[in-house]
Image 1 (cartoon, rainbow, N blue to C red):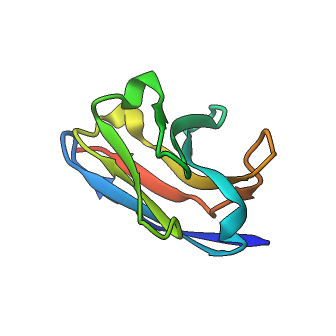
Image 2 (image 1 turned 60 degrees about the horizontal axis):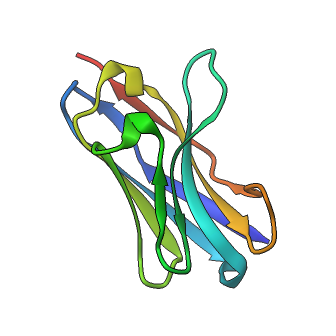
Length: 119
């Protein structure tokens, strides 16, 4: 099993920055990808950014390109999402997730953390 615990998030004024972190414990050696998702009010959950554990290839949603950055510690036991120039439309609950080797979907999820960009 794998457990994910998020930290960060909160309230920021438009144009501000926030950093989210996700700490993993348990079967981290079997993880092939790490990702951040978000779910806005009344909307479906959607991918924000993802990173492969081997090679470090990253992928971003269009709204996140040039604004958000996903990164991971060398141990791959924690990863982060730096969010800059936040806008009200980025307000959502953000979730971290891990995908195991050989699986097509993300099996492990954090509890979610609220990010609100508002004046």
